Image (cartoon, rainbow, N blue to C red; front, side, top):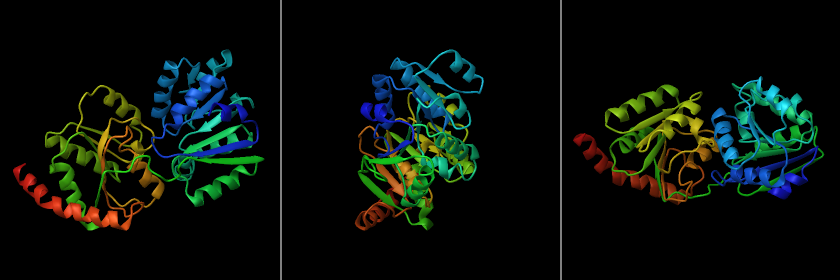
Length: 329
């Protein structure tokens, strides 16, 4: 990775794809320190900037975490090796051509940037128009998105490379899969509420209101619960650091990208996910430290047909015990 950083120059872009939890950010921080390369690292979430900022400080890297436009005054007074920013606080005119630019979770620059965060697309276009040396990181790059990305890059970049360490793949395969047809959502709800379990369970919900409702239900059953929706990631991380024991995390897809979580033993995705990239990011939250984990899904994507049939059989076998436990509660 050190050699890659040092070899990048203007009009060269490198796309790196690797499974969730593969350690891309850690390896890049190490390479930044060893190579002395000047880097701007842009993250889609403020919480990710804050986490990497602490890691960079521990590694003794001269780092600036840009929170407001006023922070660029400090940047003009002192040369930082590493600058961290979100698209909203990024200012392309502040950097010369020597700064390598890294975009983390780059698929979100299109998925979110073309829907509710226009600044993500604007910053991407600003960076590419200035032809900065560029690295784009993602675990999930669909063929359709890759074609669009390469087409955009070719307007300004002479050389575009891809380093594929495992695109749209899981680093760790779940020990067990539980498959629920859509009309059996209540069975999944009974499982995370009433089945016997150890460790932390992560429940993904489609809507913000559903997150709040399920979190309150689980708290009423005596579980220790944290919840997170869009715009609350920083607050969620702060709360997470203050809790020594936790039963459940209930969240929208906001925690599926990069945010450091405790060891997740079970991942519940309580709806059918249309976007395969988001689906794999959610699955990838389990087993990130190499431990065994289970997934409870409504999607038949990614896993084999035999695995899905076995997963359906497992929920039929567990139905009786979950029903008995619900009566005991």
